Image (tube, rainbow, N blue to C red; front, side):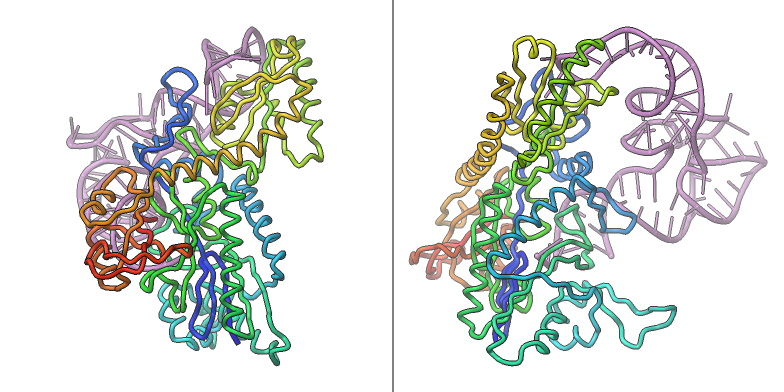
Length: 487
RNA sequence: CGGGGAGUAGCGCAGUCUGGUAGCGCGUUUGGUUCGGGACCAAAAGGUCAGGGGUUCGAAUCCCCUCUCCCCGACCA
């Protein structure tokens, strides 16, 4: 029997376990020069550092101020707030639908894992035991056998499969689980690495190894499509080197994305949120791809006095109602206690793709002003054409974000033949990806990492055989690998 | 675990060196004027100064201990 596991880091385990886990991130220090305050010199997102000033701080602030997440009372843990969770739900639902198309079914396995299960697989203990939370007491008494809070459900799932699978006739089994897992990380970052995190793990059992590998690659492709089609983040699919692969795995597949600071992020389930944020957002806040935005359009009414107020709100409400059932989510921000300008800034911070401004002057002209979050383009649109325009613009924005990210990646990906150029490249503000020949030896890889702080992100699946000389040691190389600084 | 920073009103901070009535901005509440890129005036509410111990007539401030968070590194989805 052969296993396959897919979470966001596709990996093939010993005994033919295929584990799929992929993760992608991006940060930046100089960026796509797209956003600048509309007017004046005051930064709109007051108090948030620019990406170029302090990328980490920028990221942390954006996450909190956009109300995606907040720090929890427990070290290393976070609360995913409603707005952040709404995005997560969209990510989850999209992936879930894609998994089901491939024949997966969902199930749920317990949070606790008997200690004996952990120890059953030597590799598993070595890999995970140090970063596990262990429950030793229950019901007010010491437990006879300690229970591990799952760092993954692999062992439990396979013990159940053992019961369920009587013969090859029962195969294949394709089960996916959406769950939380706990890994006691030393250092945490909102969405990118927290002690407890939400993820998805697919565990499949196959009759033959080729079938298992095929399954893994199929899931890898699902992750790639999701990243590109929904997150608008282009990724490179590849295989991890021996030293970078998932612990205990025979092989680990991955998808790697470039963040705005030219660093690589392996994209994986809950990393998706971090990647999203870092790939598209700017100094004024989030920029969300329409397919994952909980709110697509916000309508900001502008008026003085009661008469104008009534007239404007009536039109605004009619516009909002026109979208009911259309799949486009629209909110009319009719709050009285904040000014229109304040609302502009707030919704920009939250990354809402489109804003409709509607005031007396617009009413008189039978139009409204439509503003794009990604490009900041402002244009008047006739009221009766607004719905169609918005319906058309959202997919355009989705495409534009992907195109922009692709262009950014292309601009920051370079072939390199010699070590001096490679090192120079990694010193740049935006180090980016480097395609370079590598000899395949672990020692050389370790030295390279030590000397440059860069890692071999992956051996791309789509690479052509290209005899050459290793960028570092000069020994023969079969082809190029992707090297980058990473998250 | 190492290095750095921080904990004072809901939020952001000053005050700490040099001990002496707990401050500022934002937000909140009330009233009024406003509203096309973070409006204005007036009034009001709001605090175990992270926690514990010590020194002192007196501690946010000085001493000792503890906890927590953030950032940078080593480890990781």
